[in-house]
Amino acid sequence: MAGGVVDVKRYQIISLLYIIFVCFSVLNIKISSLDSNTYTIKTFQTIQTEELKKLSTSNLVISNNIDTLFSLPKSRSYLKIANQLSTSLKIVNGVIDHVNIQMKKEGTTLTKQFNSRSFIEKTLRDPQGVKLMEVNLFALSSFIKNSPYRLPSRLDELIPLQKEVTTLKGRKDDWQSYLFYHKPMGISYMQLERIKLLIIQTQLIYQEAALGEIGYQATYYSKLNPQLYDFTSNIKDTILKITHKVDSIAKLDSMEYQDVFFNKIIHSLSTENVFVGLSNSILHDFNYVLDKDFELEITPKAKIFKSDKEVKIIFSKTGEYNLRFFDTRKGRKLLFEKKVNVNKIPDPVVSVDGDNLHNYNISISDLMSAVRLEAKLDINNLRYFPGRINSYKVIKIHNGKEEDYYINYGEIFQSPTQKILGSLKKNDLLIFDNVSISLVDGTTRIASPIVYKITD
Picture 1 (cartoon, rainbow, N blue to C red):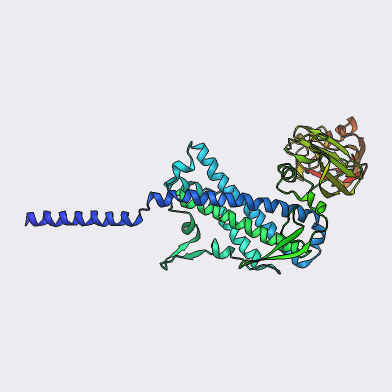
Picture 2 (picture 1 turned 90 degrees about the vertical axis):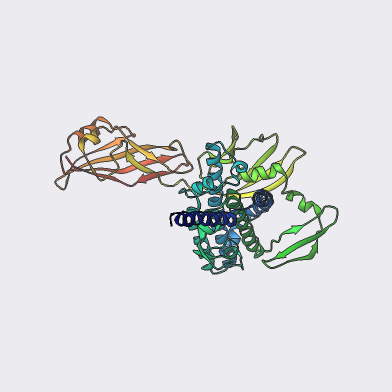
């Protein structure tokens, strides 16, 4: 009996080891299959580079026709979807950057981690990882479906965008696990690059559709053969057709979109939130030399300044300006024109300087530590205030009645103002009213009053 018991246990152990061996055999993925994903990743990255060039050109044409595009319901809807796709692209890029940064921190590489599961799963489970991307992509899908005008898209199908995904064997898996978790890094990283490419291509489809509403079409052209070809495309097929002959090849000379210099200007150009009287950074992180490599012509006239890797412009009045960029490396060739709308400086926000003076209720001790009023403008990362405080009225309210006041000139509290502050008692009100501010755009503003109730 004793020998029989030993044999039974022995066979049970052998059977268990066999089952474990079979399970590992099923779960094992050939190294060569994983390694081949490196070529898939590189392929996606190569296609992304080419598609981003098209997207850059599309962005330029849209920028030059933005008012017309937004006046049409269909193109406006297409561009809103394209903007959502642009946001999604930034988020996917952020996840990829997060993975790359974590690899650098841990002194490892994609090649070293390619067949490993632990590193990529731990990284993608971070708050900056897959969950962030899932929330955004599902919101993107909902936004597109609820848009009044949309194009047939396989984005939902190819990513796919649904909470539960049914595998080929009929098993249900949640979205994150289906695409990313419990998989070698070679597979998860490939999925990130694949999703990035799909978003880029879908954004390009929507932007080209918007431009198509005002007559723009993707084209091939040749300086040697004045025959223009354009592509009418949708998800299912692409139709090539000859549309018309180009009478003047010179009209196309400025369309050398692949030129490195041209692309550098486009990527460095910033013409949003431009304000009169301020030093507006139009080109940033820009290594080419003004008046040597290129010229900038502005109508109406404006002051141009060149600093380290930056070109700044001060506009003297509000309204529309026309910027013309010329390549002067070989002659003087017009690259493109850009219309810029220059806005009035927004109203500044005024406060009493100090750490504990941003609430309605304050103590006398906190108030007495302050020495001045200060004005701020939270635009364009402005590090200075473009103007000055002229004057303001300091009013003390005691028992519901105005008991004392003083007109203070300049931002610093003058002696009569300090005297009023020193006389305040519990439940008194202190008001800074009629705050007059002069700005560099030549305007004078009256800021909103500041009201404090004394707590002790």
